[in-house]
View 1: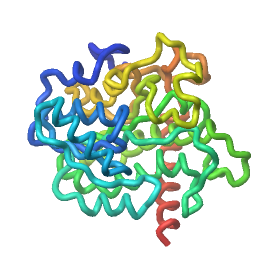
View 2: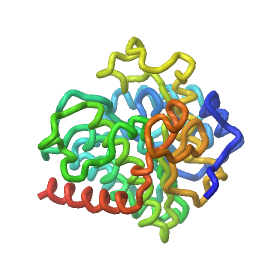
View 3: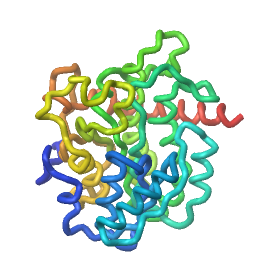
View 4: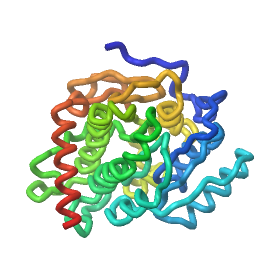
Length: 312
């Protein structure tokens, strides 16, 4: 199977990717869209004429972002709706309030390398926020996505997935010493596995899902990691938020991705599958375990079980 290549790359911006794309009459949801990659993803989608909803924890920040998007695009302000991915009730309320078809769902929000924390259900916070919340959101919005017949789900993962597979027997660190980077890596692997299984499971509905590495971008995501001063990424590999949003927007809008799902992209192109760290250039490569169909199906079942137990 050939890797998908596009005219865009490392330096491309979200606005460049959507140039000439017309999504008038289509609807998109972007989670975590009050700042960073989320707001730039939403801005680019608004440029296409799509009706955009910002799904955010901080509604006031979301309203400010919506006003800024309207001012810079010349279009209507995006809708703003509350969503806390770590709270199943909030996710269910968002899904229940949605009316009509949904054409694009961008699972963008996330947390990274947080101190050890657990939700009220006992779920490790990064797994709960980055994976379970988005899993529940997509499942809740499935009828709206299926109504379109060609809906796309875009899942923001990370090269951090190479830190850890999903440890199915201990996703909540009940037996392992907690490590913030292993927890982050596990959650980002889960993001890719979700894209694989959603594409397979929902193929009859025309729904496709792809995952991506946006690149190294300084945003609020680094609040627990020392931010710009951490020095873990060479300066030449740092992107602006506008560049970081490009791959998300490509997967959401490009005709080149029509009917394509279950794949992983970096720098606006599908990246190679690897069997060990270092087998690909920095910030590239997808671990084979993250694309494993059996692991993807197992994660789906586990996610459904955890959410059912959490609701009990």
